[in-house]
Image (cartoon, rainbow, N blue to C red; front, side, top):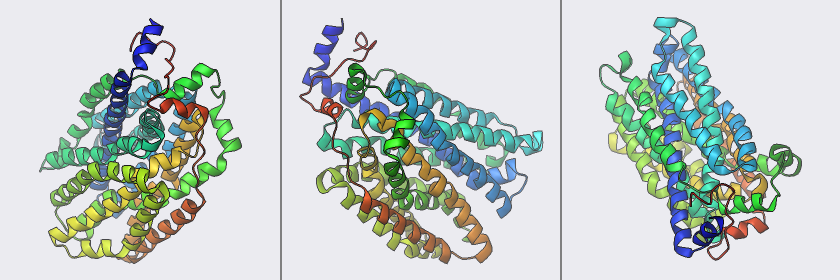
Length: 450
């Protein structure tokens, strides 16, 4: 059985079919996880202040964004936990676990009583569920991009790894659309719950897709060789801690502005500019939909022009856009507001498309899930999580956006310095199994499934 499976897996037609399946499974699963994560971000900006913190003023928004930050803080923990198992037992089953954790926490948020019902326990339980969301999405990224990337030829890794990255704009658009669809007069009275409860349907779809995927050829080769790392986290920090820090800092210009462009903009637009909530949500949906095309495009472009060139262009344009972004929003003119939101996310996508390959190629196959995941998720603490908090506090204290724009520029400077120090690691012997003409080892227990 195993020999027959190996023969079929090494057939070029069968291999291409398996590669497509891995890409679809990674992208679908990532879409579902980011739908869950962004759903919380949108609700934190719009409804969690009055519902869970008994406060509809800027103080309530700050508290809601604080629980949002807790989810970001938990993401490196998820990267460490699932990075360990992803580098020990494989990418596939770690991804199944992250999907269940993230989806389960999201459904429970939709069932959670509010402050008026259970008092202080409402924000406490909300925070705990947000921690579980953070752990789930923290373990998701490394596995999903590696499952796709390690199925692709080395010359295609920018594009292959960008497909799961496209799950971010798809998840953002889907989550925002569902909130927009339910954002009627009864939204605060219970309409906000339905988008969270709908996650149970997505979980079922994601599990079906992910359970049909085989392990990546590169990791299957590591396991077949008996060279699986016993303590991937220890090995990562012992030998490649500099690469983890470089990944952290290179994400600063992508991570912090992204959450200003997608989460803080809802606070700024509704409270400061008095724009209609439904209009802003619709603008955000349109801007996110463009990312479904632009993220894979910039991933592909990095295969042609080089990761650092494409990524660096995105960093520079994001820094230059810091002041024009708010100038466009401040016009309060619908066409200019949506243009401002679209451009912000397109410049972000110039970084996000090549980012997965840029970071992952800094680590060897044996510790790639752990190393890439940690570097990626640690930026959630230093950049993504604090960004809406910082922007909300600055807006409340100054009444303007000058220092928020300066903050974006500072993030770009940090990323440019980090990018200048990053260099891809030479491919190891296990990466050869990603090539189209390479023999692909069959992972133990998966021969019959093929």
